[in-house]
Length: 431
Image 1 (cartoon, rainbow, N blue to C red):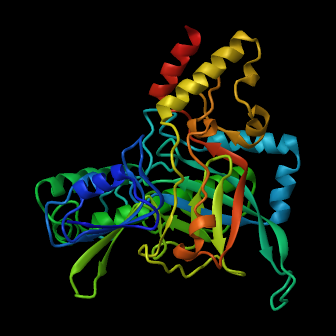
Image 2 (cartoon, rainbow, N blue to C red):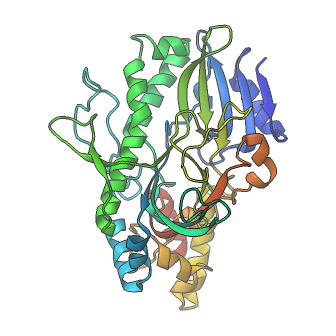
Image 3 (spheres, helix red, strand yellow):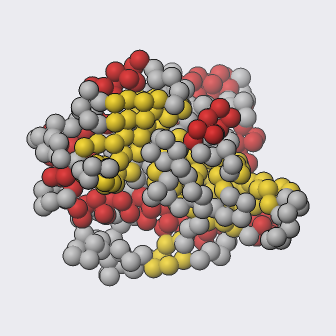
């Protein structure tokens, strides 16, 4: 029987689900806020060690959103404040940003992310589109108050300083989906993870390398586009994995966090073990540590006094919770939003549908295909809980000595409501 440990109480439903998916010899650590998503069915905030040589592994424990996460670039304070302090400039910048970022939720003709297959140098075989690959994606300018000294070696002078970051949350798109389907097919035939990822069997070692970089490359290209549209100058570098016929530039990121990551490790007995971070941050692969809270509050950034790099060590396989718990499914949220818009239209007050309309309109934008009825994306209607694991579990997770800063949204483009759910909402409003 699999070994299942929990820092917090593990619900019977989650424990049963893990026990059904894991094999004897596998091990899982359940982090605070762990659950199985009611929307996608994917595990969230669970770190898992899987035997590499044994077969009969269920693909249900893996999320199709492989190696998704967050990347960020720090923006000079004076540049960012000149933009957010002027309402007209802020509005114009938000409109440019929204228009510039392609999204799969905007059109079925858009396919985001690189292909999984590459040439002998792991380069792309064709060009691809960088953009949002799901309804939970976003990119934009965030502000924070970071505690630091005015100069180095000035102990006792720490105070809050305003800082700004260009942040992108997105996945690997086409490469991640292709990798998942190939891995699931191979596992269902009885092959082991070693067979699937260390031999010529599909998906293979090259596929694991490429899917491991796909989401990071997608986010880096999105950040380069966002910086250009907002008028920021950031450092960029050529995408070495891009096709030689389609060169592209990527942002050089200070922060890059991976979730749903799979990597091989060696246990104390020398046998092959694969570690999978289901919906949680794998600190060993990540550059910096960020956790997501709900979209209104933004992200939580963990730092040392003068560095984004922290040495995270804990008994949860050196991982940290990433996603806050979902309160309502997207279908439920869309119907709540549709009912609110219907009431507002009948009252001849269309801008009164959302209780926080003015604040949201100032900070968020999305591509709307709903005509004159602009239904807000699901996260803006409270689909996710706030993140609150630090106050109770900071010591056990190894972040009690870190500085925690909240990255608050200022000018952010969101992925819109999925077309099928949007059509259902519009039918409800118009009947």
